[in-house]
Every structure is written in structure tokens, then in C-alpha cells.
Image (cartoon, rainbow, N blue to C red; front, side):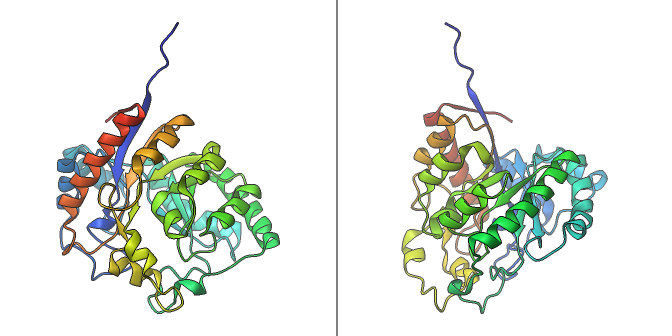
Length: 303
């Protein structure tokens, strides 16, 4: 009997541990090269883009090569909920060209229309809420946009996100019902939203094309007053951290991904105060834990 081929995983990290794009005060004053060097020292071979990345592979390519790092995605602030699809195509065009040149696996699509994720004065409870009819209309738009992106050589992966229109498990279920968009599964955001992370994988595994291995500190999350405190307040308080330092069972999460045959990127994305949680030490901790759970789940970690 022929042996079943081993599933392959690649480990990446986001620069948000070094420089926070929404909260400048939660940033380590290091250069792009130092950020990449530390990620490489920690063992990662991919990094999502951030504000200090030149969006030009002629400039960025040699720097990435120096540290053995590739681009494993990057954020696009989408406005399709209220916007026009043709306008969004124009807005994403420059990133499309860059990510194709970088041979990235996807663009991370985050819906920022109506979102309060970047407003420090806006409590979590004031997040936008959609009816199923509104989700159905939005689902058709995001599906058409995703189809166009894929046809043009750079797929998107949809990031459900705290304080945004698609935040909770029920909201994600509706979007998956009314769309065909590929899914970025973020364990930390789903747990923060009160969802059952393993049940979400069970339900939507066929749509998952990218994974963020974000952990949470449950005591911090549970202690928030969502009628008064914002998403950014939660970040400052330390709601997020790396695998191995938080409350989520990443062995169970990664085994669930393996059960359904997921192969591809597992990206550590954990924004927190670098003075309290030094980025290199956090990156090393996250990488060590991911290596452990990848082995337990039967993945071969490839470069």
C-alpha cells in the first residue's frame, strides 16, 4: 500500500509585533532589515508586509534574499461593503502587481468599511452589524471581487476581524453561506469574538486558504468591558500573543487543519507592546511552539 504523502506547512510571521500600523506607540524602533533578521533568527521563512516594506520587488527582493525570507501575504483595507467593485479593483491594482512580483500566496482582504477596529475611542460593542439580506448583497460583491483577483493572478483570502462587519462565528457563517470567497482563518480573532475555533474549521475547512496562528490571553479578553473599551484598548492591554504564550490549544487547531488536508502558510500575527513582549523572544517562542504542534499533527515544515 502506497504511503500517504506528508502534508507540508510553511511558517511565516507578520511585522506587526515589531511595528504596529494602528498604534505607533506599540512599535519597536527597528529597521526593516533588523526586523527581517530577527524573524530569520527565530526560524521563519516568510513575512507578511508592513508599513516599512518598499512595495517594489526591485528594491525589496535583494533584502528579502539576504535573510532567506519570502513575502507570505499582506493586508488590503477593503471598502467593498459600501463601495463600488470597479473602484476597489483600481485601489488594489498596485498591490496586485507587487504581490505577483513577490510570488506571494495571497492578499489578505480586511473589510474596513464601517469597522471600528482602528478607532481607539469606539467601544467593541459599537461594531457594525449586518442583516442577512445585507450579508447576501455583500457576499455577491466580495465573491465577484475575489473571482476577479484570482483571474488576474493574485487571490485574496478574507480575514474575519474583531470590530469589523464580519467578526463573530455567526457572521462568518452567513458570509460563507452567501459568498464563494476564500477564507483566512484567524484563531485569535475568532476566539476573541467568542467563536468555537475548532467548529469553525470543521464547518469552513474547504474555504480556508491561509491561516493566522494568533493566540489570546483569555483573562485579558474576558476582563474587557466591551461597552467601554475598544479593540485598540484590548491590544494595549495584551489581548493577543504568540502560540505557546496564550490560552489557545494550537496542537488541536493544527491537527484540525491537518485532518482536512490544509497545506500552506501558518503565520504568527500577534500585536502587543514590544517593551513588555520583546519581538525576537516572542517570535522564537511562537516558532518553537509551531514546530512542536506541526510535528504532532504530522506536518513537514518546509522552507
